[in-house]
Length: 317
Picture 1 (spheres, one colour):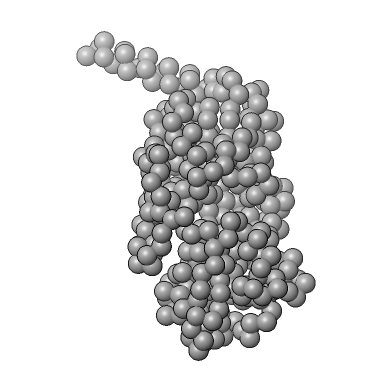
Picture 2 (cartoon, rainbow, N blue to C red; picture 1 turned 180 degrees about the vertical axis):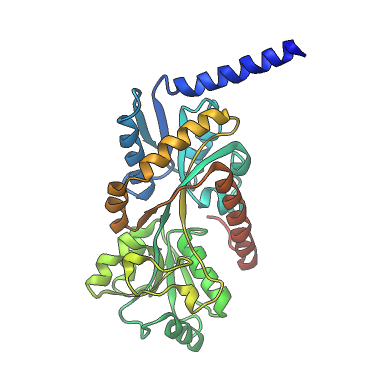
């Protein structure tokens, strides 16, 4: 018994030492999306913050393709030593499992570290649409079923899911027009070739200010303070909530002590008032939670969107 207790103490001591000495070489953050977007911006902010406290560099690498599955798979199959991280959007965990055959199991092969952000999404219409509120938009869509077109950045994208949920909850019918990304969709939204869009605030607010788009509501469960009196969709449509998020992950089986070290340092960086003030106007709200709470949150989000995807019969590209 004494011998086993001694072995246990030595093992625990070695794990603590491992965490204290971490990192001993460069760390890589994989972003499965193109440079310049919200995930890339946050990843580079984290890397810059860590540069001031760690002696080792933290490098951001964009690995795109496969509906974010390529970069995510790379991390899932990396050694579980804490040196390869994934900063990814919610659809990798809550949507893609229902739309595409993934080369990994996101809820099994990746360990949550912390949620890092919520992305503000807004419901807007082209200025030609005779609706100044969610209630008026729903009434118009019911009076003219199939006349309105809503755009998305692809099948199963947040824009697609957000508009689909709105139709399911209101009994309306609009036409889905998928694009290869948000930019070409907004290019068609501005002249009115599509009329309805639910998407990221940072790409829409400049056009709202110019009067080309009309802001009706935000998609989150509660109002965003930076948007003043803009209501939520859920205030008119009970049960509606589209709240896209970003999270930080490492390969499964990464030692808990390493995850705790990463979590502590990243949470400290994301709590910076200066960083929050910098990213807030871009529609990025920094939030953090514990690995356990984040894992529970992901399971609930996965179940919610799985139900909607199956009910609406949404298929992947």
